Image 1 (cartoon, rainbow, N blue to C red):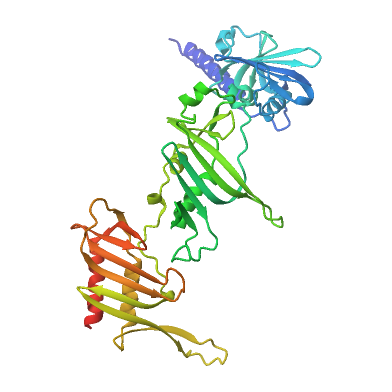
Image 2 (cartoon, rainbow, N blue to C red):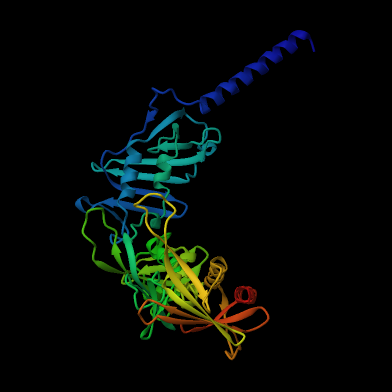
Length: 474
């Protein structure tokens, strides 16, 4: 090939590349800051909004003072912000570019639109917007307006996304309370119930003044772990709807979802509503929730007395559904406030050791005349003062005993060690006994304040025994 011909072909190739580059720049370049795009015709006051995709057609109608409604069922609880957002998207719709006299609508996916919007203005004028493919370079949609096949527009996703909704994407879900503090909680199972209540003043109800939540068991109240109950009540106060399944459930659906009277778990909470600073204390109110079966997306739930069914988080539902005394009581065997103890009797290997707790005042080393007098506890046995550090370590070991499980079967275990606490509380808990008995090679049985079915690690009991032996042998 002659050199001139080669040069001519090279120039033509460069021209083609330049044209392609210019085209890409035109499609991907950002509009100038002052450029507002190409405004698309839109209704001023739409009275009807309709859209069609591969799942069918949905229509909303503006009924004036009563707001927007779902055309096929005016009882549908329509979230009014949805048509408001749609109307706003229509009024601000614009194109970044237009393609005049396109050769084929099929090239743009407009022969079979993925979404077609129809809006009817109050004067009867109809506006249509048909969306085709997405431009791979710009991420914009190809659009036909009002059936005009001579012009294809490139538009952003705002208008498409505002209408790309299914029916239950538009439902107005029922409001959940603004919980302040929960004061009582019950879980009613078809096989039984669980009832918890909060007591601000727990004096006389528990040996531990820090216990405020209790399980009602007949005429008795069993103390619970406050942090565990707090975690449980947060499942109520933090509840949210994942999605709505129906707004008008029938008996057949209730049974299928496990929400009928024969299957549902009913959660009832007493609470005070959240109030703003300076407002008066809110009155106590009641919240009731039904829990049903579970699917891959969550657990079926509904407000008691409602006809709307939702999905909620299954972990949240299960924490409420399976709440029990064993899951809510403290893991600690004994949480003794040693300031309330005047005397401790320890029985080990048939011998009882009595430690007296004597609080004495100690002058401060400070030269300040106003310095407060310090107090300290002296531990004595048979008139001899015991090492306060060693006694303190032993008391800490007692309070550190932790349940590893529940015992079942025979309780005829032999006692290894027992503690009797003589307290200055002047109530029903002024004398308490903790007994540790042999169970198996890995566990001991702990009995305290009427509970005799808890297991503790045998090594912890062995270590505690060694501390006691060292204390009295020294």
